[in-house]
Image 1 (cartoon, protein in one colour):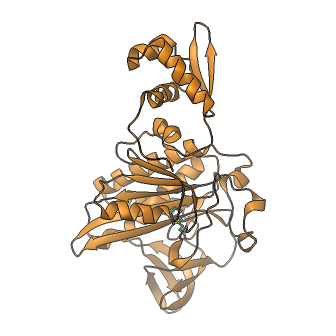
Image 2: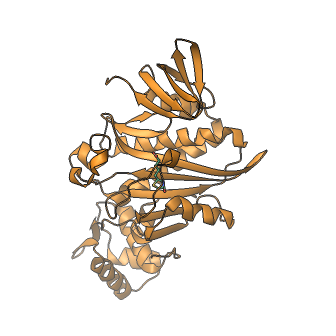
Image 3: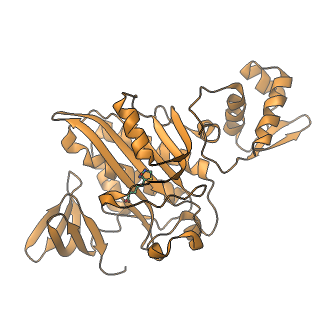
Length: 332
Ligand code: BTN
């Protein structure tokens, strides 16, 4: 288990190198800026190398970060984070039951907005509607964020759609241009699911206490690692893109996009996210069957309303669906 720690000087050296991107930074500049001796900088560079970071060193030019290890620990993620709140306190684990459960416990203990739980593997990963989320180690992204939005509980469903827009943008930015959203918040690529979101909430009648927003993304899962019952249904970014995706960079991009969309939602309401959701949707204008708690309905998915509910044109008229499972009846 890796506990959340305050940034140490090794982490600061790493953050400095990460910030410089492809550029070399001289040992002198690093030692001046961080108030470390040249020998200490050298020691930290070597310690980072021992942990799998590839750092080039060139005489008269300095150091350059070439490759980061494929892990989602504090050390890998923190230097890449461009957020003001989200993930600034990061709880990173090798294995948990469910990151949502860990985040819910933190929220109940009163942790502030923005704390993030990330794990390399989950032994009891949960999906929507009581399903299991397959969570093998070392390949994917599993995280949960504790949010404390100032909003009425009746508006909390908007957050799931806001998150799906952030997640879909991140998947597209990672080189999977065909990613689209199936209502309410599944990310599909060519009809196969690569990511899902599970939001849970505690609220008073007039105020949200906390929202735990959990997301699972199949990042580098290989075709042969997909369980037999999910073949043809699930996929991963690496399968769709034809090349692996650096997980720490991807995780940092997701948190950055998520925070930007949450900020926009807090400032401007649901309108901008609703428009973006419509533009990224794989559901609208399609023939669908929707399984709801009250039975199935079939029709054409026309739109989402101002609360995020799906509007389906059936023979009986326009139906409003607040929760359910959508089946897309015909391929595009
Ligand atoms: C779904 O599409 O059914 C939602 C899947 C959500 C999975 C993520 S993985 C991280 C977080 N922890 C969980 O147990 N579930 C969510």
